[in-house]
Structure formats: C-alpha cells, structure tokens
Length: 555
Image (tube, rainbow, N blue to C red; front, side, top):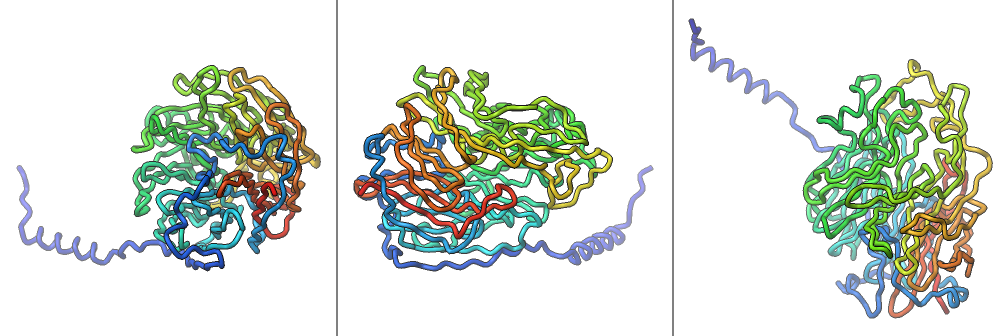
C-alpha cells in the first residue's frame, strides 16, 4: 500500500531545502589580473591604422596564412639583391624574455608579445604605438614565461596568458576589450600558443600537458565577446577513443595531449588542425598502455562545432617526450597532392594525404639514434632529445620550387627512468617519470647543432641541407623572390638561395634568436623583421640581454 506524506511535512522539507540552498555561497568569478596600456610617439590617433596602404603586403598570422605555409609572395629580395640588406630600425622591449614570439604585421603595424606584454610598433620605423601589460592573477606554479604571439581580426588582436586566460585588445589603442577564463593556473594550464581566428571564432588550446593530471583541450571563443563556443578533449574521456588509455586513478590520471604553439585552418572545408603533445607520464609508457589517443599527432576538428573529423597519428605510445609541437602546413604540391606537412620533435617531416590520412613520405631532418631503445633506471641516451627535432617553428613551403624548408635541432638527451612505484604527482608541477628530480626532462648532451633541410614536397627526398653550428629554433620563411630566411642561436640572421641552399646574406642581432623571422611590404618596400633575445639559460642554455625587434630592408 502506498504511504502518503502529509502536506505539512512536504512544506517543511521544501522550506528546509530552500534554506540550505540559500546558505550555499554564490559562485564567484575568478578575479582578473590587472592591466595597463601605455601609448608611444608612433600612436595613430585616427582609425587609419587598420587600413591597407599602397602596396602593403602583410604578415597577418603567426604562419602568415591560415594554411600555415609561411610563404611570402614578395619578390623585391632575391639571391642577387638580398646581399644589400641593412638594418633600418630596432625596437628594444626593455625586458629580458624567453623570446619565442612570431611577429604579426597588419596595416603597417607590427604586433609582438612576451609572456605578459603586447607591443604594437610601426612596421617601417620601429616607433612604439602602444604597449599593453597584463599581470597574472594568479601565476602558475611552473611557468616557462613564454608567449608565441597574437591573432588579428576586425581591428582586434587576441592572445593567451599563463594564468589560464584568453583576452582581446583593440588593435589601434591597445585597450582591453574582453578577458575570460579558459583554464586553471593552479593545475599548470597555461596558454602560450599563438591563436588563429576565422569566421568570428578564436581558436586556442591549453599547454601544460607535462604537469600532473593536466589534459589538453582545444577551444573556440567568440571573437566579439570571448564566450566559449566549444571545447574538445584531446585526451578523450568517453567512447571508443577513451579505451586507448587504461582507466584513470588518483595516482595515475590520464594526462598530456596539450598544444602549445599554433594551429592551421583549412578554410575550404572549415577544419582546424591541432598539433598535440606527449602523453603523461612522458617516460613511463607502461603506466599508460595503449595508443593514447589523441597524443603525438594532429587532430582535425570541425571549426564551427568542434566535432572530430580526422586523426593523423605521428607516433603511438611514445616514451621520448616527442611532441608534435609546430602547426602543420596545409599544401597542394606540384603534382596536385593535397598534403598536411607535419614535423615533430621525433626529427621527421611527414606528408599526410589530407583526404585518406595515408603517409606519402616520412623524412628524417636530424640525427636519429636509439629511437627504439627501452628507457632504463641506469639511463638511456636517445636522439633527438627532449629539446631536439622540430620545435615551435614548423615547415615553410615554396610552391614555386615545390619545396618544404625545415628548421631542426640535433641535441640528444639521457633519461633515467624512475621506478613506477616511486612516481608521485604534485599539482602544477612536471610529472614525467624521470628519476632525476632536478632534471625532470633528462640531461641534454653538452654538444648540439642544427639543420635547415629542403625537402621535395611530392617525393620526400632531401634537396639540400645546411648544417648550423647552433640549434635552429627560429622561424623559417620562404619567398617568391627565391630566398629563404631564418636565424640561429648565435644571433645570425641568414638568407639562403632557396633552390641551391647557398647563404646569400648574413646579418647580426647580437642575441640568440628563437622567435619569428618574417617579411612584409610597406609603401613599396620589402622588410624583414626578427624577434630576437631568447633568454633561456635553463632550457636552451642561452643567455640574452633585453629582447628586441630588428627590422632590415634594402637601402
């Protein structure tokens, strides 16, 4: 027989629940950090700053085009003329930084970033238009203090911050337009990557996949308001892809798969391509048996909805911290092949067929050694090392020569594997499986060098190769003038004959270069801008004075 509850008791219970709900503390948004904007003598007081001038050839995104080709159509600088390049201006940032930013140039203004600052400078004179400084709230426990640049669209620039936020600035004034929470800095979720923007959406994912329990996710934000439109988990939590991981526990959570450089968009299909990093713990694959989707590869997502479209695996179950760091280049080869050119820290460039996902070629661009040797508690040396292969600057493609140009690092690492039972995780701190507590990513060799390699985009064969005395981590840019630009950690800016690999010109910055090397035109003159000043004594073993942007042009 059904028991009926007196209406008086129901009324009292309802009142009690209402009272308890009333006593719950309200949701409190995380406090935004403080910011300030300083204007400079080159500040443009009218709306003219965003207009295209006569013969302004821009560099409007981190990799120039959304397809990520890093190719410039400019022809003023050729193997014959480039030797006359001279420094025309220098912009000192007055801050020491691990400078890895790629400059963006729109409407005669260069935009460049450090971890907390955004600068707008005149692209022809290096005069300051404005400087915006954002102060974290709170700072993450482990911060590499890096930012790789902005995205530009409709009079705004967009960027991430390492306190788990994404924000937009007015491109003309430097004033903050919106600032939103995207991640948890206490867990080590940071946002150093250069976003890309398309059809009113800003695409950006979190870094921090080496930290305990952090999983990568890719997000899209409304460019007008900062509202989050969609989010995709790069380490899946449900469905068949989640079965590529063992069940998570409090001691061994699923982790990794973060992205930390930039992205590529196929505007014909509306697909955003996301490079993904390591699975965690980096050096103990036995704790994460399986294919560990979607780490060590490139994910193709519907740009409007975030739905999965494609998956391009570069590695499976890796134990070397061989992230796919750099954004891929979406290219159409001379033979008409539609390829995704992917270069990773494993030291290879791979040409994936965009439609089928098949590999057309896989070409090594640096030394490969002990790639299949098991890691042991006694220590295993492998090449490329943790700081080897292709890092945050990826391929450049010349359609004229059908050639891909790859910067690479030849630097080996020795890792001592920790016993799995000794592995302990701390929130916000690297969780790699290395036995060396003071060397969570192993010990790099004392010697190192770099490579610039030209690869046939149809065959994958090496056309020419340049051996650099130092690692090449700076951006590489091919041009229609037949010149390829890059720079090295000795501070040299180099121009190569794109066809033959001969050095045609050499400039000097006086500082290690790990940032972008880009070219653009203003009022009929072609310029080359270099983001110099990589101060990274711990990770890259280089020291620098204050960062600078240096601009070169013909007399």
